[in-house]
Image (tube, protein in one colour):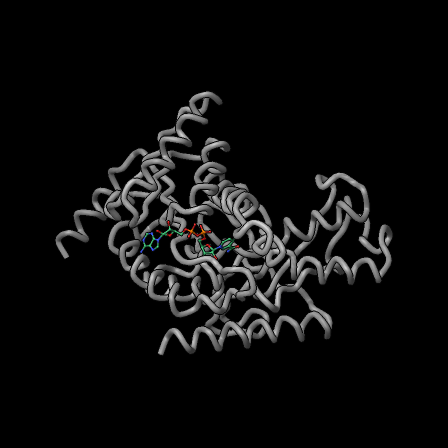
Amino acid sequence: MLLGKLFTMCELISFRMTITIIGSGKVGASIALNCGMRDLDDLILIDIVQGLPQGEAMDINHQLAEMGIDRSVRGSNNYADMVGSSIVVLVAGLGRKPGMTRMDLLQTNANIIREVSMKVASYTKSAKLIVVTNPLDPMTYLALKTTGMNKDQVMGMGGLLDLSRFKNFIRESTNVSSESIHAMVISEHGENMLPLTRFSCISGIPLSEFITDEVQSRIFEATRKVAADVIALKGATIYAPGNAVATMAESIIKDKKSVIPVSALLMGEYGARDLCIGVPTILGEKGIEKIIELRLNDTEREIFHRGMNSVAEAIRVIMH
Ligand code: NAI
């Protein structure tokens, strides 16, 4: 109790805010590097493996020094070092092996997220929390419930990574700059992902003006499957997830109010209640400032509902 009060005071008087990344493996290190290169904030990498976060921090510091970015990156095995963080990223846990689905990680990673979320609640409850560990939507829900944070504070990164893959396929098939491509991917970060070709455009011009329905269907399917291809080839996805988390952190820190798909707690939106799933949101200094409700057609709604059912079942398994 006294310790809790002391940490709240420390949070209040802490002038140097930090981004804390819990889990300093492949994706955690990539998140730190991407946040560092964008000069967002000082960084702390935490892990249970002795030496790993310290080594990653040194390596990243060396790169930033040469780039002229004066940020401090620190590695630690002590959860208490996250006190006063403005943003905490949860990326501790197992990744899937070739042939596995994200849901195969459910029980193992739930134990890790439960443990780590309790630490977040005791050390830095006013932070914004970005969950990355898979299966993403149930883990976001578990972190939200375990920390007791507000629903605006807690979000999962999945949709933005799916979107970066979707955009790459659109770029390849249209041969236009990805700068001009605006698209959206929602629903479960998993088997029921929903790339929204109907809501995608190139500088305001509908995608259908550039590519046929058949090519759009091919891109839709490719986006849903491509993460498994990367994992089969190199064992993990690393750089694009790091960039996606940094984009979310940047929108929060700079109060950019970017429209970004994140896994958010729905309380009636999209006909869902009390589950986390990918939807378009406005991200700003308050965290999730608005959930944008799209009018889905029958086919889209069916996939979204399958996503909701899959996430609801996973939540039922881990919460009982
Ligand atoms: P990794 O195995 O390279 O790193 C995981 C790290 O977590 C390890 O260093 C491990 O020591 C650490 N860890 C385990 N328990 C911990 C605890 N209690 N406290 C602190 N650290 C702990 O795995 P990788 O590739 O970095 O992936 C991490 C997670 O991110 C996986 O669940 C993976 O599926 C997920 N992921 C999610 C993505 C998304 O779009 N949401 C994209 C890519 C990966």
